[in-house]
Length: 116
Length: 113
Image 1 (cartoon, chains in turn orange, cyan):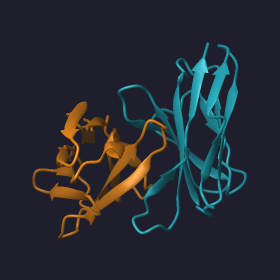
Image 2 (image 1 turned 120 degrees about the vertical axis):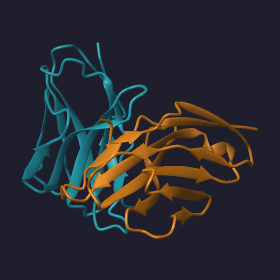
Image 3 (image 1 turned 90 degrees about the horizontal axis):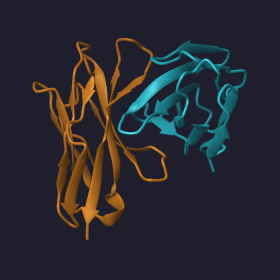
């Protein structure tokens, strides 16, 4: 079974609008972390935001917020006030703490296009 | 300034040749990782190393080899045994950042002709 599922291959959003990128995960580990990375066309992966499984509050970092619904095993990324520079691939990833290896499992990504 | 460098950015090789991809970091990170990315897919872990002189296979290690003789360096060799080596390769490292997140290099695009 896939540990991370991103069901939206591509998304479009109007500049200055908000957009939600979906991510669901599958784990039996009670302690885990969820990450979102941005990959512009240059190829480098840029860390955006982190949510720990025991965190009570949803994570926020500037225009990025994470809508964490633990019971539904979802960790959707919300980007507010979209900018043209937000056009990129976005990857959701999970780290399971039980293994101790700190390895990340990645989803297949969502390509976001911001329309002027 | 600190970061991860991968060289070269683009690499072309003939089928049957081994090729080594470079990854260097000056972040003083203990852990380093190699991922492969294919079009329409996420990143898949090839090898990782949590400390110098030690490394473990990831999910798709067949046809690849690594070494970790220095903390700063984690080269990846794509051998002729790798059946479909054309892909984008990303190196990452992890230290004691706030969320223990991985930091990535700019990647190397390998094309086997």
